[in-house]
Length: 258
Image: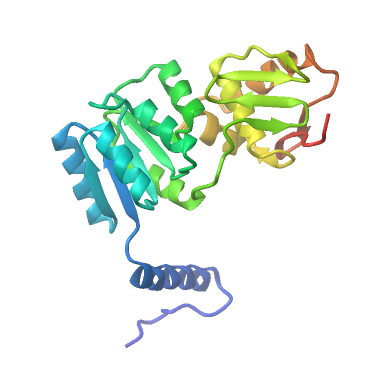
């Protein structure tokens, strides 16, 4: 029996939302639930995460040390991984570095008690996709995982090259036309993000979500400040304007050759 006003009429926004929800429901029936790996050595926290994710419809595997987490991540096509940093047997950084070096691009959310800015920057440089500190509300963890799943497992080369620019995330090195460029961690993360999307216009909100934090609540003009810092440092080694401002939209990194 149909309820009044449901399903909505074709061509309306409600109909589109209804159709998308129905498609997702059918896909889940055919393909099964999305599968997550939680690598966490604190048993009570690991179990709480598993229970919460299972209640949201995910299938969840647990690992309580880095070695076991790496083994599972290699063997199974997970939709996303929740990874602690301070783990027995193998450090979280080493787990992520090894996976990326082997070409495993499953999205990784690092969930850790380490809250230093260099911890955050190092994690991003090694291939972590999102970074949250403990304790984080479960609703934030869940929203972050959903965002990572929507983004998908995009392959990211170990060393990025765009025009005269070369960036090595693992070694934290940048050069332009063969000359080294010294960048602070946030400048490095900003350039890293722009180099992953060469020639594309990226908005300020996209930069905030990916270089700072999806839930950043500070002054959004911080993006303009760091773009300015980055431009000045690149200008010391090249006469080419590498970062273009697209007024009212965002920024674009030139993808032209040297």
